[in-house]
Image 1: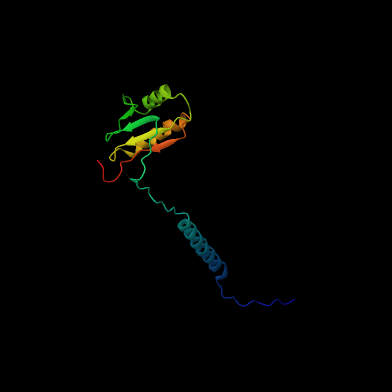
Image 2: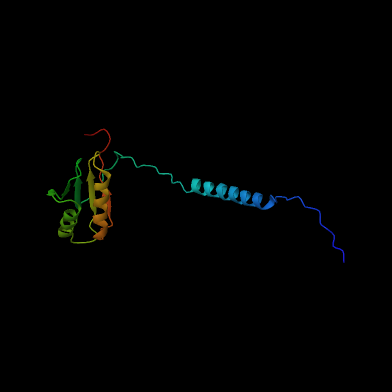
Length: 136
């Protein structure tokens, strides 16, 4: 029996799988960047209107420029936990509105802590006090 000797074959590189992977990666990147762009929020900040000022009676929280708190005219020393205790001592009805007076230079964290303390006590009616433009 005679066996034929095979001629040496030239090795070849199949590029189709590599092109498929690259195209899938490109499609993935294009889709994820378009989703990231669509998830952006457009926010319009509120403006103070001089027409009819709201006269609301409720629990007043004042935050000064240094981040200190006062509840209904009484200074609260001790930070966020003390604010929580002071609010809990004055809350009689969970439907009581909370009026938040924050200095324009007040730290953002202080405002967030005041909102969180009100939320934990079940106070959902929160009003941000502003000055009317043109008045001091």
